[in-house]
Structures are given as C-alpha cells and as structure tokens.
Amino acid sequence: MSEERDYLLGTHDAEVERLGLQHRVWRPRVLDAWRRAGITVGSTVIDAGAGPGWASLDLAEIVGPMGRVHALERSGRFVDVLKRSATARGLDNIAASPVDLVTEPLPVSGADALWIRWVLAFVSEPAAVLAKLHDALRPGGVAVIHEYLDYGTFSMLPDNPTIEDFKRLVVEDWRASGGDPDVGRALPALLPAAGFRIRSMQPLVETVRKGDLVWQWPTTWGRNYPRHLLEAGKVDQAWADRVTAAFDAAEADPNAVIITPMVLEIIAERI
Image (cartoon, rainbow, N blue to C red; front, side):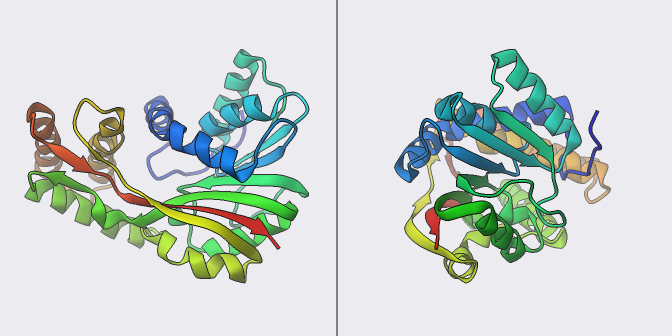
C-alpha cells in the first residue's frame, strides 16, 4: 500500500462513499464544464487533488484509450482505491500518483487540460499550486476549476440557529487549518498572476428541497463534520447531538429548503 498522509475527514470507507455521493451530485455540471473546455477523446488531463478518483474515472472514459489521465493525490489510500476502481472498470489510461500539490514536484508536463475542485480552498498556498499546474500544461492548455466563492450562502430555510452555528464553526475550523472557504474571491487575480487567461466565470448555487439529489450533498457533510469536530476535541457531545438533531428535523420538514454554498466555476487557459 502507498504511504498514507493526513486528511481533514480521513480516508476511511465512509469518506470514500461521501466523496462519491458528492461527485454524483455535481457530475452533470462537471461534464458540461469539461465539454465546454474542450476535453475530448485523446486528451491528456490532470486531475489535481483527485481524492479516491471519482472524477478521474469519468475523465478516463471520456478521453478513451488514446488519452491519458494523470490523477495526482496526496493520500496513498485514495490512490489505492482509485487504482482498484480503474482495474475493476478495465481502464488502463489512468496514471495515479501519490503527490502533494504544495510540497512536491508534479510528475507530468505538456498536458492538454487540468481539473481541480475544492482543493485550493484547503491549501495554505493556492498561488504556488496554481503556478505548478500552469507549468504542467502545454501552452494553450485549459484549466477547469470549481472552488468555493461564498461559503456563507449555505443556509437552511426556515432559518435554523443551530445550523448557522454549525456553519460558523466549520468556517472557523477551516481557516484555522490554513484554508480559505472563500478562495474563489482571490482567483480572478491569482490566475493571471500564475500565467492563465480566464475564458469564463460563473457562480454555481442551488436552492433545493429534500427530494432533490443535491440535498444529500450538504446534509451528508452536516452529519460527518460534527463527528470530526467531536473526535478532535473541538466540540462536546451535546453540541454534536444538537447539530444532528437540527439536520434530522430539516429532513422531516416538508417545507425545508437548502441554499448550497456558492461555488465559482472558472475555465482558463495557459498563456
């Protein structure tokens, strides 16, 4: 097994499944963005911060046997999960590497495209990561980026003070770890500084009820993250129980509505 490295919510089976659900929720938007960016049969694509590889598998099927996906992921366990999934699907066009995007050189150059989602928000040096990714693309190569723009839009309606308190603590913990839950606000300046030309930008936010698949994305996070905070000694059991009860109550309320955290989609190209 590859060397393991620390992850905020771990790399256990439950987190692999949560990330799979998250990818399924976002998959229609992701496929559309890849198409508009020009990712197609024969493309060489970097999946930066690939996690257990749910996007890498889709990319491998899109680019086909003549294309190549370079899945770069710092968690050795996630790399192993991806390799097993690729073998099970008969995909031999994925090169999965245990690489830390911040501290290590990238084992690829001249790629046609890169995909990165919810990675820059969790690193302490997003400008350094963008510079490395720029150098890994060919001139004219395209970057497709999904990063949080305004995490504060995440809300439960009717207003729920417990969920608002949960959101506040998530943001505080996120920033204390060196990340930025609103990193998208910096990207229109960081990308040109790293040598990219921005082609398009658009905010992505949803307003959904329980019957919508998107509902599962924030509610699953809302149940997993309190456990992380509890295990880390940052909250007590009573607080975690209140948050769980608040999400349970929303599930039972036919009038409940979730507004998702706002994400910024950017398509840019290497100058």
